[in-house]
Image (tube, rainbow, N blue to C red):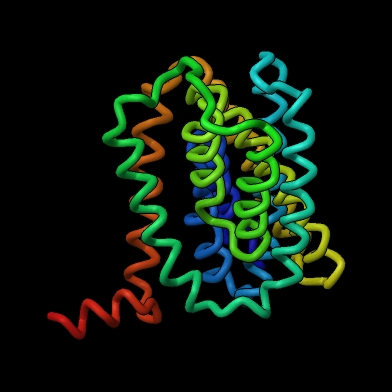
Length: 260
């Protein structure tokens, strides 16, 4: 791979790290870029986990330094997300792609509508709708599993869970989202690395750039809170849903074409 292509991937990763640290969805940029660079789908997903892990680690460190992560409960959520990420990566060949193609765009549109229309999404915490134990046995399991299988949109799903189920304010939810994103990314990356699917030179170059982007994004998120996080979540979730729906292989596209 030439210098120009590596430089282009680094630039895309810088932007992806910025987006990931605030709203998630950086994989929407990096996975297609890796495919265009000549990697096969398995290599692209595996290599993307490298930059995603570094971006999440960078943002987690920044949020953690500011005391925005409650480590007493968060480390348990992180362990569950890690194990679920490993499980998802193990099951990637067994889960029918049709299921993801149908469900993920619908869920992303629902997330975009929630953050766009809900008056309850604020910087301050509100009353939790479930206990930390119940949350730990549900949300990190489901989203971590999905992150291990595919990934793009996992940050948005984690964010929605923290806001709606535990009542976290949007900045605190973003901080905990990055920790769980890091955990499920690490779990799936460990398995992909063991299978030899990761193209490490490309992944590490992208990781360095995404780390810088994540630092910028996390600092902006802490400074501006819901002013920047909420609209970016809406935009990123909508764009991810649109991209998936425009895929010629997506069942929703076939259904719409049949209707019109």
